[in-house]
Image (cartoon, rainbow, N blue to C red; front, side, top):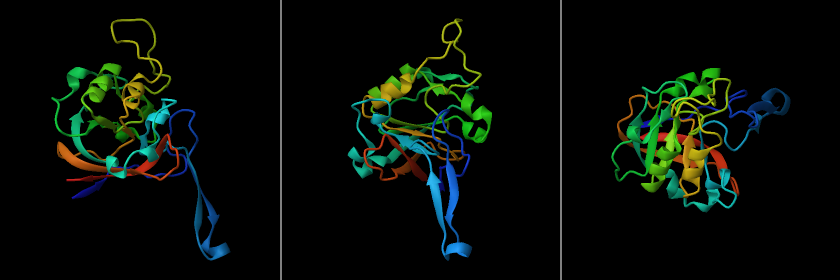
Length: 219
């Protein structure tokens, strides 16, 4: 069986704060031109997409330097649906190491796509991302970001241990500086088996720091 795990791209689609907006506007129409062409404007990290190491690492690899088969993963689903808004996913939440090559963190946060709540997703701690990299896992998540996304609900005041969120993108660095990929904005994970294949083939963009994908689960 196959399942589309991608958000569709459309004008006004949710993007990371400050990223280019997504716009899909008519360029040619059947009525005026006899054919239809749509003008697409978007960033390389729009919609469901994959991050290359170059995204955060100045000397990191670009997407086109990876063999195409890299983007067809043996995936293991990690159920994190009990996590609350802006709650960290810690090493204690991780499974035992397996022979799979992609951990997909299933938070259920895709249900908030298109709303302000989508920015307040759970996130990976740097230690969690480091464990994934050390065990040679790429990472996917059904949320905007593996790190906390800036929003008015961010917590950065001193408090109990782990009460304040990390600044910057430490989870990205832990993964991308070790040549591991990050797939973000997955959706439709409900009901997938614990193990499945995930095809996450990126658009062929030269020297890309990331690119939109059509993520398809096979099980």
